[in-house]
Image 1 (tube, rainbow, N blue to C red):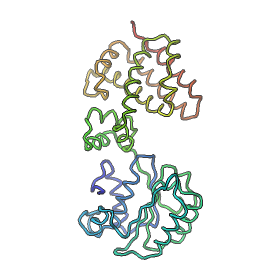
Image 2 (image 1 turned 60 degrees about the horizontal axis):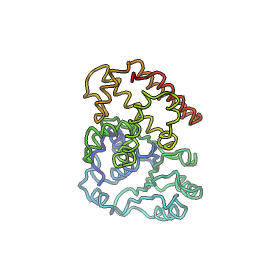
Image 3 (image 1 turned 90 degrees about the vertical axis):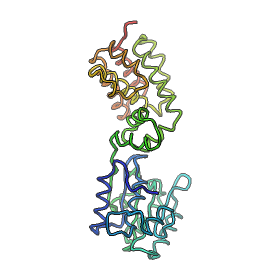
Image 4 (image 1 turned 135 degrees about the vertical axis):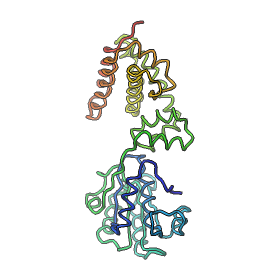
Length: 330
């Protein structure tokens, strides 16, 4: 069932309701945002709202249309998703054949094309023909996390709706509804960078939990070992290159906890609540200026990697910068 409330998306839902109530429904919409942000869920919710027969705020969840939608039994809604690694031309040809048939029971027929950016070139060209002259009753919803892979002639014929990142408190709420402990939910929410789907994936990923432990264990070495040894022990970063952003966020989040506690002495503000003893220790042994410098070194390295800087050199410079500014007396 598409729930009546999407956590953290009330303003977007109000906008979509406004489109419908104002009679301004376009023939094509492009929902764009990073993978896991909720595009498909929102696209389905929008389709359900359009098809709902209620005259009040939609969806009503009780009319025949809503019940059919929730049971995946609506004759005027079609979902098109990847088959293998792409959406092929035969899928779009089938869609176009169906488009020629008028709605069975309502005013509109809705087609949701998920991961639309992986349509083949032939499929995109076939879809373009429909977008150029769509029947009055057709609404096509495209979902994509790579708008640049779509033909400009397709995107220009769609109303663009960006899906915003969620505040951490909303992601925590989403995770708690999945019976995830609040302390863990706060960590996952911070690492997810406002992407609910990513937070959910992390919460179920045992490899992430192992990576987190290795990363936080490494911090002790970073603060205490000689620089030469640190450069010899960077396999954590090299062997997990595909997860480097997560590792950096874990490092920055832990440093943030140390800084916050040293300034407030309030452990209720700590996110890594399972690492309190280490946070208490470092907050006493490392100055605030040093921790701030460490956080800035991490952020600077992230900016460098975004600019396609040399990976290993950037990591080495980050680690030397942190370790050079922070050394415990042992």
